[in-house]
Image (cartoon, rainbow, N blue to C red; front, top):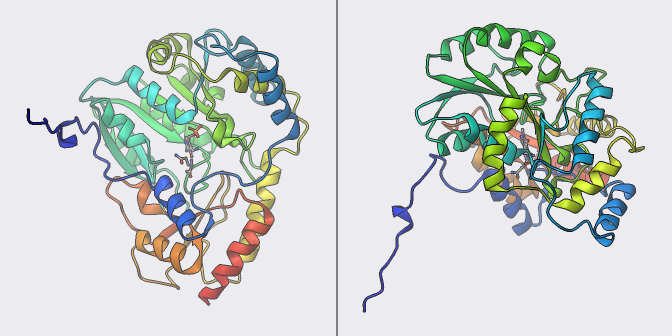
Length: 389
Ligand code: PMP
Ligand code: GLN
């Protein structure tokens, strides 16, 4: 009998993004060409000794079976206590916190909990590359609104113009990947003005909340009582304890929103890696390491001082996150994707082209460097970049 050929083109496309995510592409290219990888955002240094010891202990002591569906109670309580001490906000650990396998998953799950086909979601661009595919996987429509270069502030008139009766949600990200911009308290007030009287839900991607520099501070949606009532706030332990590969995060949302979130979560992942939850529950609040924003600010400053001897243009230092945006107009006229490939292959430094963060691949001739690296990694990267002139 003839074998039936099943073509992948018959499968539902689900979203409009083509090809493979830029983070996979650039990290693979870096490995292939033995380049220093300043592309994908992950630290290359050792994690806190106490945290790795706790992870080993958790496995040895037998914490190896399914944790409760919303997350280990001890971890949820530790998260609530941590937010109380840092932001002064009260969070109900049972009704408002769900532990997730990373923030990417939490964002997808929040969208899946709320979106109906045909709903619109406002996305501020440049935007983290999973947002728009996640919206489209739910049959909804992403409505991009550009942030204003070079500071990448929000143009609130543009946001107001993007709102229609079909707008179901807006997703915002502060501190911002890829630009390093941060929201002021006034930005949250402006958002409250825009959504007041509507049924628009806010997704606040706050994964870099602990990475704010120069004595500034992060304002969380949880500190804004009016917005908090209509928001999912999404977090990642990856960025706090330099453990991006543990893929563990959480969602904080009002009880009814949390119920809707868990309605999906229980059938997609159900629960999260138990030893990691156990280790984080013990570590959170007992962490004596230098605060991560001070470590990362020093790395940013070191990297920026080295970059002065290269032809890259720094429009403004990152105010938060792992990332620094730079212009290369004095080096090349290539489109940013081609420039990033060339830089990886010929100079040996991998970066991310910023066009990857736009649905229409808008090319402003900018690249993103990740500076969450050991000093010697940054030194070696810039010694290569100095060849550029
Ligand atoms: N949001 C933003 C803005 C990010 O940069 C990242 C990348 N780490 C995530 C979400 C996802 O975090 P996680 O690795 O926990 O899925
Ligand atoms: N958040 C990281 C970045 O922006 C990467 C996460 C991923 O690889 N999906 O580089």
